[in-house]
Image (cartoon, rainbow over all chains, first blue to last red; front, side, top):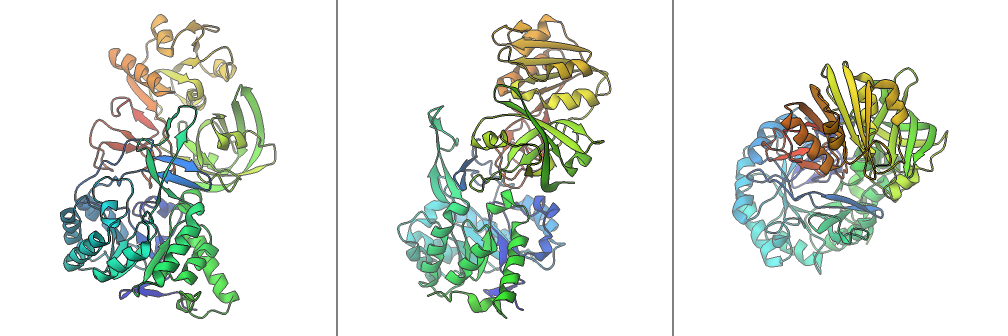
Length: 302
Length: 254
């Protein structure tokens, strides 16, 4: 049975990753999950300098989902390299995908160049879709010209393959996927969170200090499947699918829709072993369905 | 060591309006210390995130943990219907807990900040004075505190029991002195207790609260402001769930 998948020449032992921002750099979850069994650890977004993030409350629950407005708090790329990458050294079987964020093209480039010679970094995921920071982030992700330009610029400076992380908060995500492909992206990942809002009726005020937050969790899964399907039929570069994946069925669904690999996000919060539970569920499915190679199910639902 | 498992409900009772005491059989007890908390997960699949609830009592002999919580929303409302024999997913122990210090300690609890002080009061090595603040005469846990502390002072907002006013009013009125203060309660109370401690040059630990998602320090949802740049975050933020919930009152912005 083969569970290996390859994206831009990088071979992952299986298609299961966790979604950026839900797992830190794996340190906290390593008490629950053997990181060596994951396809990849996708790190929390890292910027050129430390970012303080948004005021609290940053988190609230909604029906079958949650809103977050962390605001990409991170310790900056120097600390990240010295501490987080060093920690990840010990997990030789798992690949490391570093999520990169910035307020401007220059800031993305600074991070990408700092990471260029870090041998532990297998791939870069460029976050052009965070709904919770005002400048940069989503500003790059909602205009196809900007998507293409930032992709081309990052690609020209990056030594590792780049994955552009797309926002669902657009009128047509296929347009953004094509723009990323035109800019030279090695792959795309989708979806980032959907912008939402929750109001406290007793206090008659916003629940989140940021007023809006990114919605994630099981409730968004069907939207993510639809968008992965649309993009898979619009571009020829590989897709990392994410959005509400909670069970192995959700992951298989995403792969049938066209994702080469999948990321598990919010599910980690209510099931710290969600990633490995999903992996073993997929393996059982492969046995039951006589599937020799996981690659044979990618995008077969047309 | 953190554990996630199904705990068995041994007992649940209502202590006051909206305040419930839940005793769980769980191996989390083996590693728990006062001031730590557990995440309790809902059996209702549409309620995803765990509810962080502080530990009120640790009974290693019986393998039980007791939590006392207030019903504040749909999640805790569901918990209040749990009955003997029910199973519920829990994770813990989480957070750092209180350091056990001092020959003369004051434990201060306000409202639903009262429960974590019970196990602390039991385990503190020195003489313990408890100061508890409530809204009105709908008290809870006071009889249990009487059994384990040297002195108990009560303050109520409406003056129906003890002194009318805040816990700090009770501390001033009774000229309380100590070499360490531990406090858990609403932020304005923590601020006032921290000021009192500073005036009297007493070391003070506060237990903070914030909305959480992961509970283990990964998601950065539950940060509080720190006075100095934090070693982990490299900004002025500390994670309540992992670096706390207990902080020195002088290291955080209250």
